[in-house]
Image 1 (tube, rainbow, N blue to C red):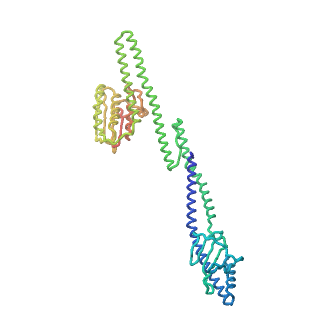
Image 2: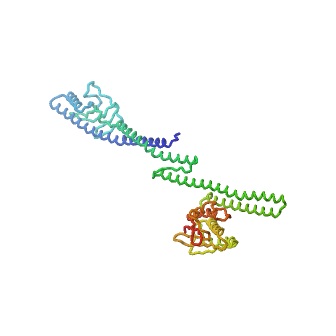
Image 3: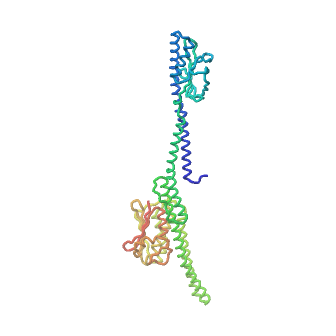
Length: 459
């Protein structure tokens, strides 16, 4: 079995070329060759009638001069054979040889080929009869009022036959030339695929930055661009997975370390019989367990957004109703921190998406704004229409951030330099991933008197 695509394409090309040439040759031989035979047969028939007229006129002239019929016929046949460059003989009604242009007194035996024999204008003509002769013709000739005699003409010329061999050789040479031209064409097809294979093998070996450098604009070029897009997404997912694993390890290490220390202190307090200190250590352990549990929940939620099937975005979601419900949901948390939450809606329209997933994103934005606001501050939630998009803005009294932090806060596990310790650092990362899945955009910016996160979604 051939395993090389290059050899397969070249072999199929050559086979197709050979089949095409065979069909062309057959078509030419059976169509053009047959036309050639018909043309030759008509020409032979016309020439045979001229020969018959010459023979009859010669015999009649000799008889008029008083010559005997037999010598007159033999002399006419001899002269006809010399002028026509053919073997000529005449037979009687019973097939007996009466005169011939060749010595020996015996007519040659000519084997006719049925499919090459036909009658044209009263002349029976055989093209390429057996024996290697170009043609053979027989026609009746009335001489001196006798019963018609049969005039036989066997051509001795060999230049008028159809050039089947020459045509076949020429066709074979053209086929060989085209097959040679197929070699660079096949290489042009397979060489880009070879480079694409090399890039795939580099990625499989761990080089996630490998790309297929192809400039073609055909199907192979589109395949290369699709491959590069896939490789870029795979690289981003793998790097994100590595970063997520590293961050998870780092984030879980802190509560586990505190639990370990608190456990040692709890053991010491129990050994001393200090119930108050033991109770305090136990409460600290429970707080760290709850923190680790929240962190694991956020990690699972973040990972699920990558692992789940593509979101069904055909649901009609009323953002105004959803925002109103979430403001009530985060109300107890805000009240416990002395923070007020105000909702302002200005002509918002529904969007297409997943209400369950959008609820997670908006809840994270509101909780993040509450957790990072000072006591006594206000969180303003604004929802409105901007051209063909719906815009949501969440503003709090947080201190301004520099340009780099405005981008970094959407990265997993990122915490600002002055951020509070609570929270997993995944809230804004989850919100960004959900917004992007809904074909929207999210960004953060400093505004007069505070800090704002803005989300835009297509209506």
